[in-house]
Amino acid sequence: MSANEALLDENFKRLGEGILDSKKRIALTKAIAVLQATIGQNWENPRFQISCNKAGQILLSPETSIPLHEAWLYKNKAALESVRDGIKEAGNGKARKIGSFAKYAKDVID
Image (cartoon, rainbow, N blue to C red; front, side, top):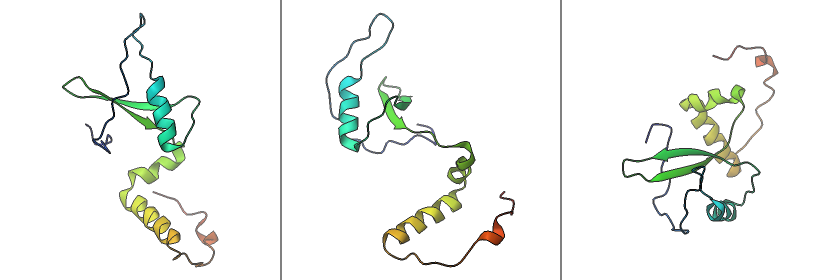
């Protein structure tokens, strides 16, 4: 797996069998139903990262897109960790007002 792929859980559940059709497609109806029931989301057009190992196993990881102007956060580990810490603190009731940041509105972000 590459750096931006992650196996988050090794406990896979067999859902059945599938066979390729004449256009080399396979139905994922059962898998999508389990996914939607598990994470409680209903997508019209789900996206997946597709990974394959040397044993021929295929892993589909559900993905979502983020706006390009927000992608910098995921590339800046320190900033992302700071945001995650802030969210955790806010969830624990530790949020507090520290005033306006308007004076920084025109600052250039690296």
